[in-house]
Every structure is written in structure tokens, then in C-alpha cells.
Image 1 (spheres, rainbow, N blue to C red):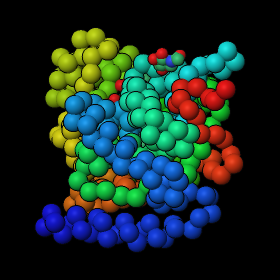
Image 2 (cartoon, rainbow, N blue to C red):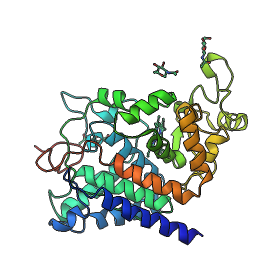
Image 3 (cartoon, rainbow, N blue to C red):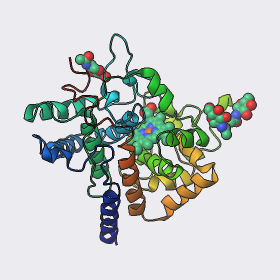
Length: 327
Ligand code: HEM
Ligand SMILES: *[C@@H]1O[C@H](CO)[C@@H](O)[C@H](O)[C@H]1NC(C)=O
Ligand SMILES: *[C@@H]1O[C@H](CO)[C@@H](O)[C@H](O)[C@H]1NC(C)=O
Ligand SMILES: *[C@@H]1O[C@H](CO)[C@@H](O)[C@H](O)[C@H]1NC(C)=O
């Protein structure tokens, strides 16, 4: 059965990828194969495998980083830039600082690629490939093609991260609007929310859920009371960490949706998916169908998210260091 599902997963992806094969935006499959850095994707894959084997937490961090990159100015590596004298960078913004980690990992991969083939592989592509490896290393889909050819942007602004990244307090209409503004459907929004099936959150992000909901001194009535009690024990300091998926915290799978249906979604934004007829229908079907069906949808939605507002061709640049634009 598992084998069958894995094959189904792959077969449907091949069809999907040939579907969007049109080169309208300049991205291509196997993009680096025709450059002086044909090994680019393999280098990212090999390094990510070693790094994640050594420290599992890197996989969820990089998956989240890719989402935060793509939702702000598109997938052009602006999340990686440091502040300048004129702009406080995205990475300094509340949704990213201090919770978003893993910048050092991208810097290490970039340094290795610059050593092997200087000035060829963009930071935006490295992040997109590394996020793909995170999915592969934590989920059950073997591999999937990610088109390359993204160029790196020149600007990163804190305010744009605040404007474009939905907060954990978001209600369902805000979530639907936020994703729609990036060309992603309600279905894709629910599918991508399954990214929360791995990783951990600072207790600071769940304030008002496990304790003192809306200043009532009680937990949020929409949060499972056993989980609320457990979270109150785990969260001694705001900087303590809790699993986002209480059922299979280290596996990218559809158990996130089972958790939601048991009122165990961590954030208000997770629980919000149960408050709208359409999103609830998606949650239920993602829970009901075998995980491979959801993973297949997840991968398609990841590919789409990974192509939001990309820079290609002569746009942007290929940064030599991911945290600073070229001199
Ligand atoms: C739907 C809107 C979303 C909201 C409001 C949201 C919010 C959050 C928040 C508040 C955290 C915890 C940060 C902290 O430690 O304080 C988090 C973690 C995470 N998010 Fe999201 N997120 C959303 C969508 C996504 C999507 C689309 C993905 C990827 C496909 C994703 C992947 C992750 C991952 C993997 C983590 C764990 C990171 C780690 O372990 O360090 N999220 N998210
Ligand atoms: C860039 O920012 C990171 C943290 O985001 C920091 O660790 C690093 O030291 C900065 N690099 C430079 C060269 O300023
Ligand atoms: C959802 O949140 C937004 C922004 O906070 C608010 O303007 C809107 O009224 C809320 N919608 C519902 C249905 O609660
Ligand atoms: C929060 O509390 C305020 C004031 O007591 C009340 O008007 C509001 O409806 C409450 N909000 C929710 C979501 O319960």
C-alpha cells in the first residue's frame, strides 16, 4: 500500500511538472545542469542531508524561511539580507526575530558553492532547493523537481515582512486574503498550513491560547484543555519551545489535520481553519485521505509558492554572500 502511494505521489508530480513546463517566467528544471555549476542541486542536497542528520531542527527552520522569503517581495532571497544604513532588514521584523533561524546553514551552503563555482548559484535558488530537501528529509515523498533560475533581490525591508506575513493571531479571512494576494487558493492555503506538522514554536507565539485568553484568565475555549494544561507546564519562559504537531512532531505528514480536528492546533491561525465551511472541508479531507495524497498536494503547493514573484534573467543579481548585496 505504501509503495503504491509513493508511486502515485511521484507519477502525479511528473504530470504536474510537465503541465507548468511553459518557460513563461524564465525558471527551468535542471537549470544549473547547463551552467558551469551542474552539481549545484546535488551539493545542496548532500549538505542538507548531513546538516539535518546532525541537527533535525534545521529542516523546519529552512522550510519556514522559504515561506517567509516568498511572501515578501517574492522568492528572491530578501529574507537572507542583513540590515543596511538605509533599511532595517526583513530578518529583524517581529515574525522573524528572534524565532527564524538557519541563516548560518544557507551561508555555509553558499560558501561551498562559491568555492566550487563562484558567482553562479543564486541565494534564492539555494533556499528553494534547501527547502525541498527539508520536505524530502522529513516527509515521505522521495523527491520532486524544483525549477531553478531565480535571481537575488537587492532590497529587504522590515516593514514589508510585517505587512505580508500573517500573524499567528490571524483569523480565517485574513489568512485567505493573505494567500490570495500571493496567488494561492484557499485550498493551497490549507494545504501549506500543513507545514506546521513539523517544527517547534516559542511559547511567546501562543500567548492567549494556553493561558489568559482575551484577558479572561482562562485558556482559549477552542484549544483542547488537556493540551492547554500540558502547554502551561512546558511554557515556563516565553523562550521555551513546544512541538507544533503533537501527534508526529518530526514527520511531515497529514497528522497536523488530525490534531486540528482534536482542537490541538497551536496557533489561533491553525484553529481558524475550522471556522470556515470551505477550509473545514479541506481540513477534513486532508485528514481523511492517506497522507500521500496530502503530501502530493503539499509538494504542488510548495512548487507554486516557490515561484511567487521570482526575479529571472537580467533582473536582480547573483549575490556572492547571501547576507549582503554585491559591491
Ligand atoms: C498560514 C499562515 C501561517 C502563520 C500565521 C504561521 C505562523 C507561525 C508561527 C507563529 C510559528 C512559530 C514561530 C515562533 O517560534 O515563535 C511558525 C512556525 C513554523 N512555520 Fe508557520 N505560519 C504560517 C504558515 C506556514 C507555512 C505556509 C509554512 C510552510 C509551508 C510554515 C512552516 C512553519 C514551520 C516549519 C515552523 C516551525 C519552525 C521551527 O521549528 O523553527 N508556516 N509559523
Ligand atoms: C548578518 O546577520 C546575522 C544575523 O541575522 C548575523 O549573525 C551576522 O553576523 C550578520 N553578518 C554581518 C556580516 O553583518
Ligand atoms: C479578521 O481580522 C481582521 C484583521 O485583524 C479584521 O479586520 C476582521 O474584522 C476580522 N474578521 C472577522 C470575521 O473576525
Ligand atoms: C474579548 O473580550 C472583549 C471585552 O471583554 C469582548 O468584547 C470580545 O468579544 C472578546 N473576544 C473574544 C474573541 O472572545
